[in-house]
Image (cartoon, rainbow, N blue to C red):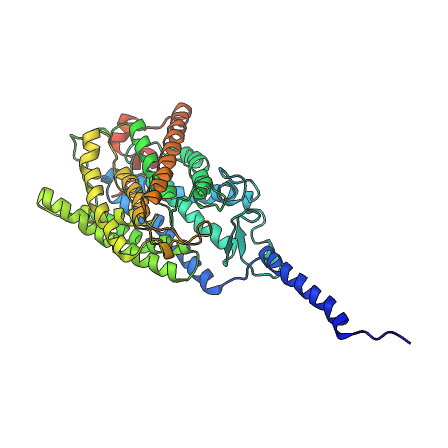
Length: 455
């Protein structure tokens, strides 16, 4: 006679197995790629297009309208060529250095030539990815990695394009091309990794940068200042009429920058969610407040508010809110914008004349100074529930401690960018020369560098 099995004897192994599976389930889920969210993906595709529009045609027209007629085409060409060059650099190595796992200081080469991106599509899978997979602080993305790569590419494009405003009218086009490649790989990619990689060392000590105050604007502004100092002043600076050729171009360019900035900041939420909505609101408020702040400061000082002034102020506000956009409330955005308008007006008008450098289109005065101010004020106005991160689940709030952390991030960005930019400029100068001849500069870069001119 076979022994009869009790219900308990049968149930015990099943319960144990269920418990084991339940314990293993989180690990399996963590290893599995996340599903695609169509709303997040649609927003990120839109944001990517908006940020690309910021460089071409936005920045191209903004800068092109502020130079003299003989340099308009050359200035437009710089932004367009940088877009082409950085697209290739980012695809070949830039993305891998910035966002593959690697070390806290630089990514590895696992994504060179975009290796592995999109391989699952051929197998019929439509999945997201995990940034920093295998690290202690991975970030799960509900969008395809190809979309994230493209979104970050547009940031890598606009950053060196911003630098060109500091040395407008006087750099050789060949030197610009070589410098852009080297600077993207040795300055931009490492700092992007420090700040935005889940294992980056700057992110590790608690610094926050929602959309690029350090990575984009301080980086570009400091590089622009160094370049302006190395190249020297434009011939005729302080004596000749260097007035903008066409402020209509500049207004159109600034307007495109403003609209595109919603992709820049709200897109940095990497999803269609409440943080993206708040980032869009704070971006609009800060830009408007900075435009008004600059306008009032200029009105008081000179008696007349200028078109060039209000568009410069608005761009300064967009710069300053960039690191803070997803971490502050509307009141903080208003304060950041008003303060930035006044401070950037002072830096673009008084500071550069006091110190004697020729920052042609105020790349440092707006992006460098605005980026520094915005990064620091992020530590003052950050609102805990909005700024919660994996590293600090309870959220961070504006405090002196956070201000000090932000200052540390600003400092390391300035030092690395300034030192490496200076070295790269000197290497390019020794190899092929940085600056056009006096005769070429007087004739204009349109003809001497590109053989074309505006009729």
